[in-house]
Amino acid sequence: MKPFHSAKTLWWGMGLIVLGLAGISTFPLSGPATAPFSGWGYGGFYDRGSYASNGERIYFLGLDGEGSRIAIRGGPPWLKAMGGSCVNCHGPDGRGGFPVMMGTRVPGDIRFSSLSSGRHGQVGGEGDNGHLYTEKDVKRAIRDGVDPDGGRLDPTMPRWKMDDRDLDDLIVFLKTLG
Ligand code: HEC
Image (cartoon, rainbow, N blue to C red; front, top):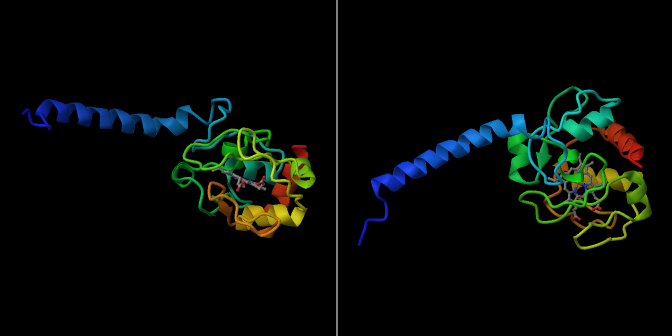
């Protein structure tokens, strides 16, 4: 029988690894910064360039009021590795509805009007879960990853270590989305 690892196979394999690494290293530069939202979650900053408020900047860049990256627990590995924020999963308009890479649940509609009226179900997902979110509930969902009844949100949704001021600013921005 032919040996499994011939020298030729090995070189091909190594070549492919190098090509793959080169691809990954250019991904954040060529992808999210300039490309329109594809509907798929990916790492890297989705940078609008200028921001009308601190809340908007948090939504797009995941940087706090001091300009440092907001610490997270959970979420898919690409988010920690490459950066990103709410926009990468819930989209620039906050409506969600698209599956994200390595995610186990489709992100919902997080415009404040949708959350507070219970119409934030997941398009193509499990459907409307009907929870009526108050401002306090939205903050808890973002910081602690729980729904208004105290149930655990899917771990695809990261837990964001945000201080009160940044969280308030972010809520104001979610209200501007509709
Ligand atoms: C890696 C993807 C991802 C990122 C980044 C992300 N979310 Fe989510 N988010 C989700 C998913 C998936 C759910 C649905 C969880 C569930 O239904 O259990 C969710 C749920 C929520 C909910 C609860 C509403 C609902 O319908 O369940 C709120 C509020 C929310 N996200 C706000 C945010 C905010 C604000 C940010 C940015 C600071 C953010 N998310 C970043 C994936 C993400």
